[in-house]
Length: 147
Image (cartoon, rainbow, N blue to C red; front, side, top):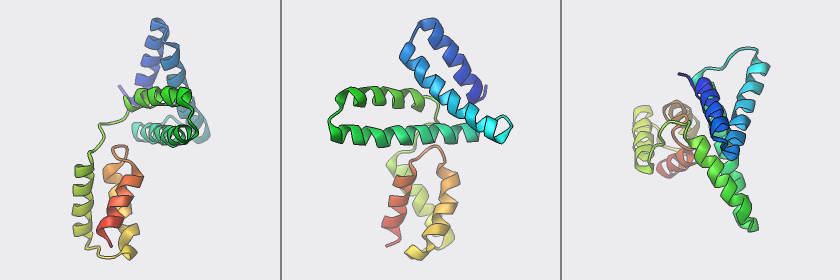
């Protein structure tokens, strides 16, 4: 079962369980997927759906920080639950140690030694960590190791 089918099945289950919040979150995700399918005029594969879900999580995490700064605890709680629901559809996230190990290994494979090589390293790393690690965190590790 691909991610689109899983979203549809989970949406139906949320309807049956009358879980309005989960239903709303899944509908938002499906709407994002459907909009891109309409734009591309073809069904999306799992990696493209994963990109959309990762983007949705990133947007919510950014909003979460802003709402915390503003003291909007009511919105913080809702966003935290939304992030938790969307995270169920993403592959297991890498730990910081695993990310650092992948970054170190990639830097050695490419023979990178300075910040000038950062673009080359990042382009090699992103397919390895796609959907499994936050790009900002990967970027931070690369910057630390290429000083």
